[in-house]
Image 1 (cartoon, rainbow, N blue to C red):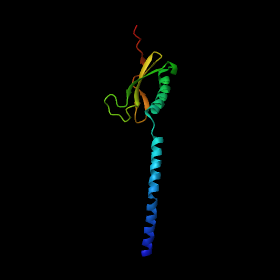
Image 2: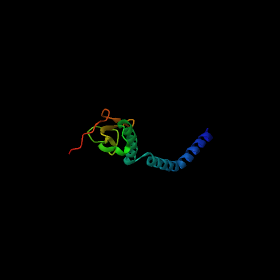
Image 3: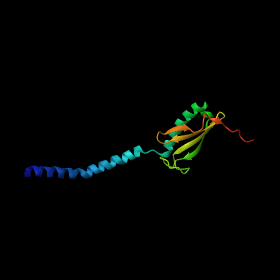
Image 4: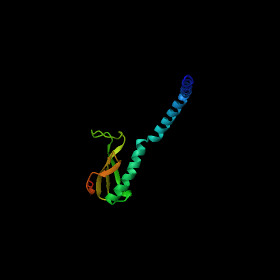
Length: 127
């Protein structure tokens, strides 16, 4: 029994010797993952806007070169608590081809939803 106990202590001591190396490796892996896993708000906004361009072209029946996008709201504006960061665009106004539509980002699915029905007629510019 004493020999068995000595073997267990010996194994535990050997594991403890490697603990600092294991901890360093774990910290290095965690740090690398956080750099890879995090994206800037600009990159996120670019990707979401590219998706919105495709959707707006289809829904408004208007080519991309005639669409104009206006940021209406970012993540924390408007007093509502949102599940996105403060720099994430959550609402765009889109005009083009005589129509205008407001698109709102649904945060759970990162999908743009038209918040106005069928692309309203755009107001004529003031003379």
